[in-house]
Length: 269
View 1 (cartoon, rainbow, N blue to C red):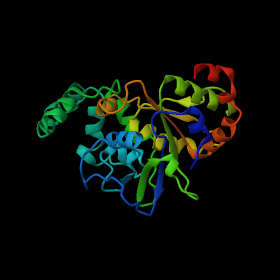
View 2 (view 1 turned 90 degrees about the horizontal axis):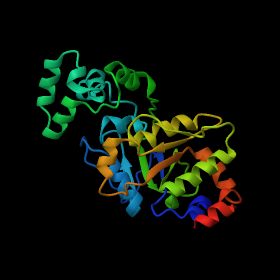
View 3 (view 1 turned 180 degrees about the vertical axis):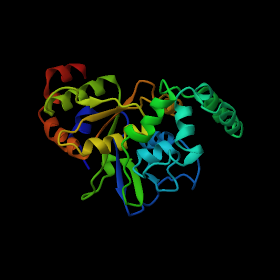
């Protein structure tokens, strides 16, 4: 698919789409079954090299990506379930209701994982808040399609509809996309910045916005764990800007004679 936005924005990195399908694409990268893995490293390969990435219910990488890709949730069963994740996402051992049991669980893990479990990722100020986030606040989807496909927008075929269109952009490009979105949306605050994993900021948070009659864009790569994963692959000054399909189509139309025709944009080129 040719995109007016991409043509005028000229991002250095590939704009991607995330879609669901029952058809397995040829020559797609896919991690090994059951392997624990941060899928943002695969995302980075698609952004830089234009690779097509394939996921299914056995190759989604980690519990965060299970939710992010619309395969339901694994937070309730993986790694000790909600209790362990709520402790891990808050302050680790000092948040644990049964410290010795939690420490014994952590001791069985590889050294890097063990240290994070003990200290906690500290994404939430308390175990109670973290528990509410994973069990109630996080939007969950369990789409019936077998596969999730991540690939460049330019490779989207006629008839294919993406769930999420993902721009990976620098600050000037991001400013322009936010301006473009604000120019067509009613009200203010056209972009959300959810607390979550980077894969969720291009996936399930975007799916949720896609259900709205007035969907917002989702700003992403705001996950320190993912930033560590992609630090030596992607520039430090890029963020993701993901939009549901119907918002993307509206932005495409406005891009023809909107902000890209402004002297403000032209003067920055």
